[in-house]
Figure (spheres, rainbow, N blue to C red):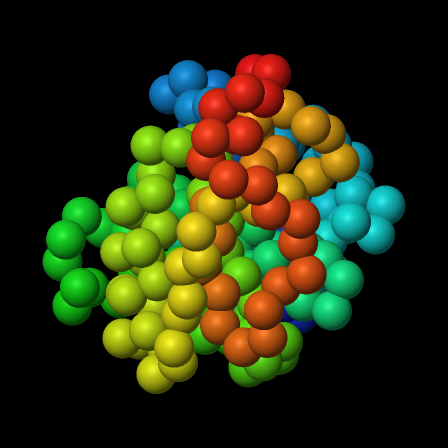
Length: 181
């Protein structure tokens, strides 16, 4: 699959994809339907997002700077509703893997995060899967890591990373349980 940056793909084409993604999320009651209002106005969200990586009519994601590293596969959306990690089949290359490979060529490392305590095992499997397809070592540290400027539980997430250790605040699982929703 051919992955393009937003500049290569075109802002009008990307806005069309965003509108279609918004409709799909609203139809299916997807939890991230609120992404699209601000992204349609400004896909870079006032500089919050570095660049977009787009596979036409298939998937898109952005990268977000956190100090010296980047969160990869940020705002990942796949039109087939095919998850970043397709069950236990390690042989399937998903659009997420295609986008991740392009991002790693540009950023030479970074992290991927997942919200919710229940996804601890999933982030571990994702790290293994990413390692298989990127030929890089992916590390899953213990604890939850701060990925936004709020102290609610949703801002503290599991991460897997490759390359340099991200400079993110972390807390134990026990402290995460005491945070407000």
